[in-house]
Length: 449
Image (cartoon, rainbow, N blue to C red; front, side, top):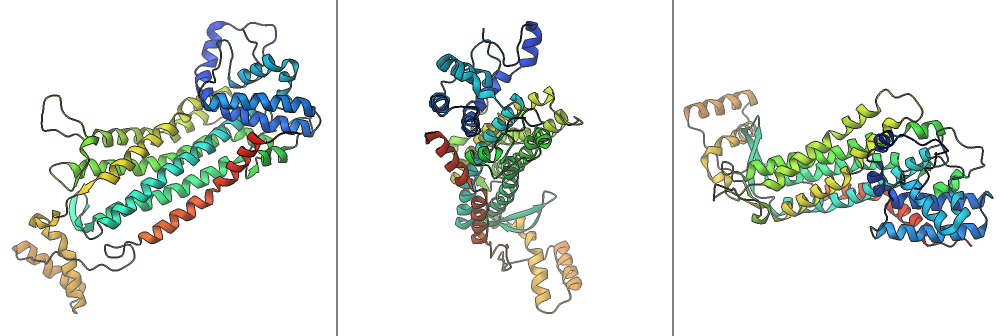
């Protein structure tokens, strides 16, 4: 059985080992390729400060690239008896290169190793989330433009209130996603700082070049204070979780609207048949299960920040094993959210709308404000106009031509979708994913010679 990084001569109780390791080996598979990437940057720096020879570095980088490729192919495993991804990578290098493989841990602790892995994993996932949101945003904008002339009732308190439009409805969720990605970008910026070199949270007596590893890995900057670098464990995940929860909240509300509007009592929209399911007893049913599951999953994601908060709450500075548990709820959340985004994108693109909702006179009263405003523009004081229309409604004498003339920014007649598209492009550009992509590609491709 492989020795653990920290193991000496005392053998740990097997039940204790099982309890303390928990799901770490399973969770570490999420981090594997990022651990390899971090090791490549670290040993490149070790060569620069004289702790590795050029030949050793070349051998190590070549093997690490092979391990990275195995991770990409889904072939990397953590062997039975090996504690975590860090141990597995070092074990593979030692098997292949002998004593040279044992040198990669110099100047590192598992603490800053896992901090780095989490940062590299998270920024990759945030990029994928942002890039998944963009097609949903574009689909909403297209639908908003396509149906901008089609009116629908607007509601307050679930009572018909004022005229709305499908242009407004689709566009509202598009703008919500702009805000969500702005928040996501802030989380990305907090994440994209280099903790490597902080070791166990107190630095190292080796003359580590943290500026070099920061550049090699494409970070915006480093976490300068080594104590704070360790304090950032849990805080980074919580901040990112809040950003994910923002997107999840938008999707959940959209899913709720769609389920409601798809019901026969509303009949505002029709979801694509292939996105509905039937009943085991009622032949007529077409249930909006995809959006119902999206709503539930997104509501679960919205609980993630609170779960992380309660795990890390009231811990003093320094590392504690409590933080390990965060990985179990944090790492899988990205795939779940991306799946919900993809489902919503497909359905939104295929939704059909009822273009004749307001033909039904039960919606006539939503035009009462339009009539009040018409009277005011003709010179009637607002309070008198309001009373006149109200009395006509009470007597059953209210009529209106079911047309609206809204012109101000963001209204039915002036959706400002072009502005939303510019805002979204500015947010996406602000992530600067290209810098990270270039750094990682260079690290994987370059020769140390």
